[in-house]
Image 1 (cartoon, rainbow, N blue to C red):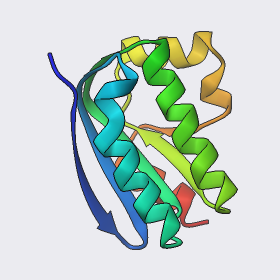
Image 2: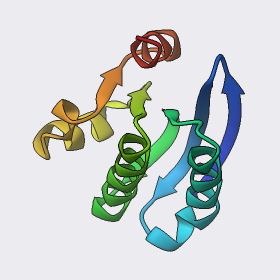
Image 3: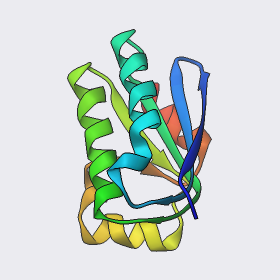
Image 4: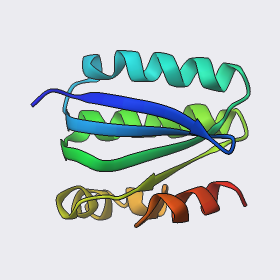
Length: 115
């Protein structure tokens, strides 16, 4: 399954719905370009909705870390929501669940980013 994403902006937060499998850095070129453009405009609150993301590996986790780094350098933050069991286990094993704001719903994640 290939990787794809949809994006929208709501209440000052850029929401990226990730879909498929994120297993290669080259798959994220368009996503990273869009995030770079948003952060360059000062839009530094990013929500990654993983409801439709089926699988991620270490390369995918690295992409998440790059997104977090870009947002925080611009005084923003990243929240992750709607994580499936397999991906959540990976976040726990790598302890990235303590680095990212992880929530069960989009609404909860948006509330975290709007604090």
